[in-house]
Image (cartoon, rainbow, N blue to C red; front, side, top):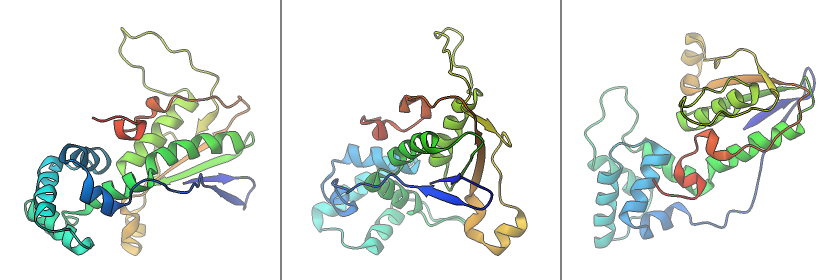
Length: 222
């Protein structure tokens, strides 16, 4: 989600909405081959035990359909070591992965970042809040490239000539919630806020592969 400041107190949120025509989570669980299901769990949930979980799901659905989120959560939990006190539920990463896959959230985020750049007037502020590392990585790289602060690749790779900076970062790093805010609102613990101000440079078309999207979000497998 991108929050575009058009004035001192006015905020417009840009969404790139479309009618979803892809499979829902039930279809993914019921029909995907084991390897493809493992790719979703690994790339969208950063689940290290993705192959083990996918193997357990495929074995279970061969005996009986997996019905309901509770049954799926228990199945995933059975494939992993017990959670330690204070840790999230073992199925959290897998559920995140399925949600991202169904909604194409990372692809939509990349498109929204580009759309907001085109819509934002010079001196306007872009404010983006992310809640997990996959989202934040995409936003961070977009702003690094757009501000001219992208990390250089290998010294043996061809040099990339960047366009004039379209944003200035203020501050350069993400703003994190304070201890008091987390205590008052525990859901804020994973939030990262990034701010950037639009320059007068024209917007450009950016190759989404430079944003660090997982291969699945770019139409390929791991």
